[in-house]
Amino acid sequence: MDLIEALVLVITLALLLPFYRVLRGPTVFDRMLGVSVIGTKTVVLICFAGVLYDRIDMFVDIAVAYGMLNFIGVIVVSKYLDRTRGEVEG
Amino acid sequence: MSTLLELIGKVLVTGGAFFLVIGAIGMVRLPDFYSRTHAATKPDTLGIIMTMIGLALLVGPSTSSAKLLLIVLFVAVANPAAAHALGRAAVRAGLQPWTEETSPMRPVSTEQEESES
Image (cartoon, rainbow over all chains, first blue to last red; front, top):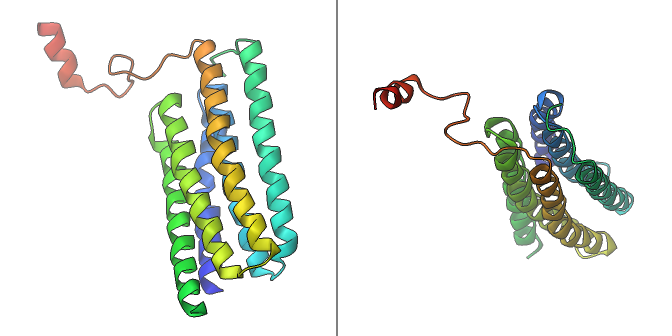
């Protein structure tokens, strides 16, 4: 699966861009958005790893759990920021 | 028949990865938080839907491909909901949206025109 390997490389390099937003984002909301995007792309990477290692039956379960954890994490943090009327700077 | 399905799957996976990369570029290029929610939600959701359906076609009919389609259903609901919750928190925190007046990249020529008038 040469195509899948190339796509894994491309998506891994593209992960650096939201990571830059996590590090330098002017507000805390930008950082959380970057974390959400990184989690979404990681779900795809895990499924690609399942195809590469020929163990898709195991990796797809990990991908489902990872996607749910990512969603719950972002929802919890945004509820926390909503309640505290979060600081806009930082 | 199986080769045709594999071809469609490869095309879908490649197109989905393209949209994922577009979403990643938008996270850096767009000017403020509210426009970045656009880049974080729409291209990413389309990209993950396309890659998961393409992988399900590549894997073939099995329990794993059903779970891949389950990921599609979950992400199509969860990704916009998460971005919406973050955006609502930002509005309630008083984050100002990017406009022409508040832009740090404001061109010099328009400033001169406005000061003349």
